[in-house]
Every structure is written in structure tokens, then in C-alpha cells.
Length: 232
Image (spheres, rainbow, N blue to C red):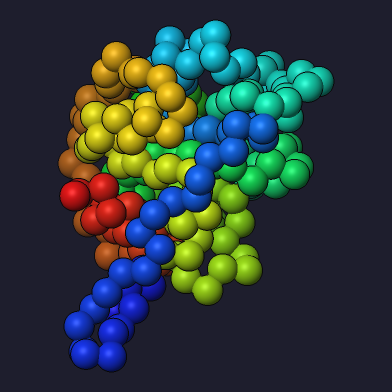
């Protein structure tokens, strides 16, 4: 049984904690850009919809965007990459912050998309190697493509409890629903989905999804929960 499902006394499966946390305007909101999960479009949408009601800041240390003083002020939204294996876990960078939003995608598709994006952009690790090599590299990592860019799950009893600690979680395939829910939470109106950094696939995809599911079960359980929870 997946980690996000619990068994009821009547033998039927049931969900607990379907509601996300209540947003507190007196504290900052951290928007976690999981690489290749529509984060660039989300950043543009946050800037367009949330100013001037909220102050928006970007955190992308790989291109020089670091957090300025005062990032933890009320009505502030920080958006960016918080990749744990790079020493940039959100608990370290935004110490004390506890309000998060994010958008997720099937973890296997995240890896595939990351490779073809790297190849399109001429990144040496992608142009010098095959997709299968990149997948094998990922399978050697301690955390999968989702959990390595999100807050630690330590201390939570289940993926479901972990998800309930967020302000909102969306999935790439249902961004319209995500923006509608987030707009209601923040009291702003989003114009619609923005497609940024899309990449075409240029070679056959190795049949390694079962290996990814076995290696990174938390990633798939979290995505499956978010996908079901946003389906209606």
C-alpha cells in the first residue's frame, strides 16, 4: 500500500489531512523550484501576480542570485533552487522558514527532461554522455530528483503527513488548478500558465523507470499523492 494511504476500520482505504496548512502572512513563503518542474514559469507568474502585495526574491546561487538581508520579512516570497546535494538545502538557506509551496512532476520524467534540457543548452555533462549514463548517475545518488530539492522528510510519519505541512503542492500537468488554489490562498489572481524552458526529446528513453521507483520510493509516493490530491 502506498505511504500516503491509510487503512480504515471498515477495510476501505481513506485519506487523512487532505487540507494543506493555513498561510500566515506574517511569515515568509518559500517557493521551491524542483528542477524541471515548471519552476521558471512559476517564478514569472509569481512576479506578475503577487507584486506589489508581496515582495518577491529569487534564490539561484548557480547564477549569482543570493538572498538579501530581510528575506524573512512578512509578505515576502522567496523562489528558487534549494538543492540538498549542493549544500543548499532550504532548511540551511532559509533557516527558520516553514511555509512552502512547490510543483511536482513524475520523478522519472524529471530526469529525462533534465537531460534533454542540458543537451539543448550545450551543457558538457549532457553533450558528452548518453541519457542512459545520466540515469545511471542518478541511480547512484542518495536522494531522488524531488526529495533532493525539498525540505527534509525526517520526523514525519508518512508522505501524506509531510505533504500536509506545505501551504500548497501542485503538479505540472494541472497548473491551472494549482494557480487557482494558490491565488485564493494569497489573495491574488494569476493570468495563466507560462511555459518556459521546454525541451524536445531526441532519443529513445531507456526502460529504467522500475529501477527509479525501487531506488527512490519517497519521490514517487509524494508525486502520486500530489497527483491524486489535485485530481479533484
